[in-house]
Image (cartoon, rainbow, N blue to C red):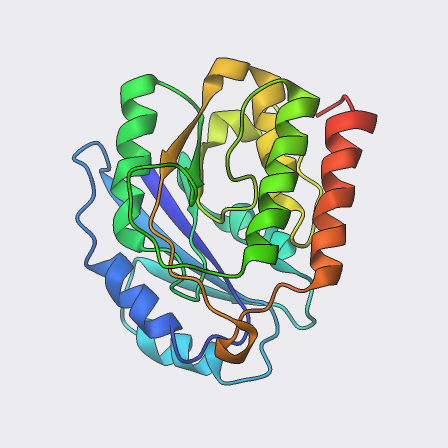
Length: 238
């Protein structure tokens, strides 16, 4: 497996080096023969871009791209996919709400089950997690229930960042969403390819609030809802 780790970055100068440290030191399953880490700065207004530029200097497995204008998380992922060399991809947020040490469990599940898509779930049993905002939790559960109803497959966490997927899957679908709707789009389309081609794995979650840098807003929630309806109900094509 040649693994491309994709990090959409926007105004995370405090946490990004810690994320890069943990990814660089991560012990991956033996099936991973090569990895690369691609950071896409989505026109940050803080010092994030320079922090990463300084960090990766002289490190061959790291790549840094930059958007001249803020385009959105999905757009940053699209930009990374254009230059990624891997046959397998995983999305890693830059804010440390999710633990990079969960990536091996995603890879192991993909390998054991022979699937093309693994979804991280912050709400499956098996891990202890701190309490977090109920309205955000309720919104995500509602979105996950709606996706489950529309595609007739039980999904527990459609909005989780951790999405591990094969290049072979991307060759069967067309991804369009440029912002937070990306997670819902890729999951719906992956399941539509083949229902038993997808699995979920519990992951650790360390939620932030707005004062700590949480960026998702109510408008983003409506965007996710629109995406679910668009691809889950109205659109039947990849």
